[in-house]
Length: 346
Image 1 (tube, rainbow, N blue to C red):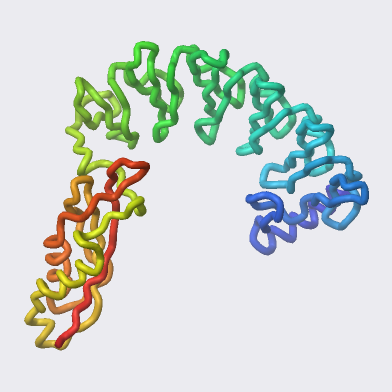
Image 2 (cartoon, rainbow, N blue to C red):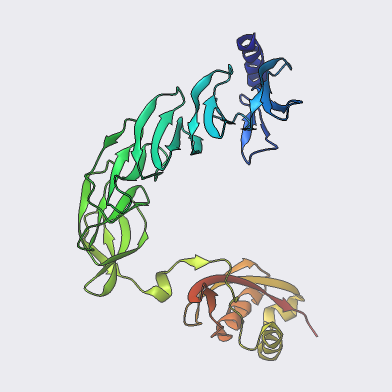
């Protein structure tokens, strides 16, 4: 009967939106309308009811999750986790110490201190033999260790195939490719398929981009941009090219604080003649970047006025430099700020 209910609900969903979803009260994800729902029995345990209210699984689980978009739900029984499908049958019987929810049809699971992967049919795709195993890309890649203090390898978690030998001290997702650290502490890159793209020859990796200019690396003590072939593109300036944050602690501020800045604007403003002539008044909102040395760059208008007010607002912001430096975890960072300049004819 559940199959027929799903057919009806599926048709109803298609007529409305093609995939009607609603928020779950017990997990921070979305669930399908029409999927079985957990309920708490008089014995204090959790079971599942079909969409029509029929008891599908009697209360027997210590914990149970809503069905998410993978046609699978996690259940805990006798202290172990397992998974059930929409028909209330086990995809995998309770046996796992912990798990990461299904994504794209695959879940990472552990027995004891070892990790593996199962798919949404209940098949083990990666044997549960690895002390460390984590997804590092959405579609198929994971990094693994065979020994707790050992080296990393790249694994295809859809098949369990070891794509690289266990030879890297570090292995990280880097845009659509991977950065790796060799045993002699040099850095290189693997391509999207896990093949060696750039040999391990750099001292460090700071940022990853793509697809043409792929990363910022350190070579002979100097930070540079490199292309996909590992060739030099241009020098990297930490004050110009580093990541821009929207918030910092403490925040970047004008010298003397905001009150002093308002007095500075009032004293230094040269009201544009055209704006005076046309009676233009209002607020100009300016956005800019406060660099690590307090200088300002990328000054632009977010919302402006006519009559030369925009140009005067930009001039005032630039003239207010240097600002105090924004910080993150005790280190200076570039921050993006915005401020309004008020134009009022006196």
